[in-house]
Length: 261
Image (cartoon, rainbow, N blue to C red; front, side):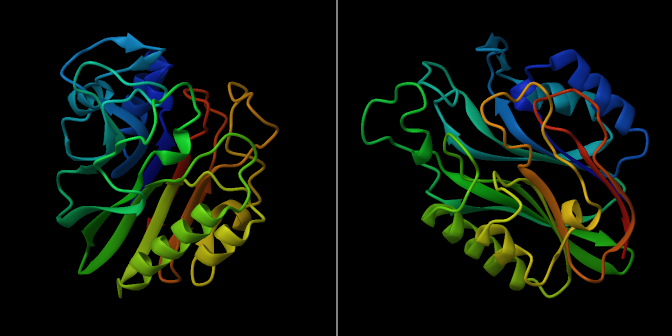
């Protein structure tokens, strides 16, 4: 099976992004996307595509789609006056059975209400975060696929109390599933953090295993940090290939995993 994980940057590179997804859809079984906006209103706002989820769904008609919004009413920077949500989207090829799908919050909660007026990124740390969990049948086995977009604050992606708590929450969710699992996405973590070590306790970090040099593109200029994205797998996931190719369709690079169970 083939899984592709990518932070879409909200569709800022809209045409190259959709071309990449179309190309990968020839043989990809699962897509895990982060930073996906959904809205009945179709426009580019601050460069983001407000109905990116609809665009991806239209392109991936051979897949069942699942959307896990983390908050509504904000374009990540300020309040909007029309329906707009932001979250993860997972697409699974229709010939694969999905036993269940659920979003579990790992920071904050869905009904986000900032305590003060949201201006710029001052209140970004208030934004909720979840893990979208799907149980998928692979042959006679069931695996857990977790699609994560982790807690964010400006600057380097080092440990904070919120990130430690988030990793403990993800680990608890992962440990509660007895089968094999793949946890992927944009964790907003540096490689040598305690937060990441918590997740590596009983999972293999493929970014480290394959000595990947970074997961960010030249479009990311906020800090010198070159890591954010990871795929972690349990011991029974047989990795055939794993790569983070220099394909520029976002400020993040795609992660592509071929595996069997």
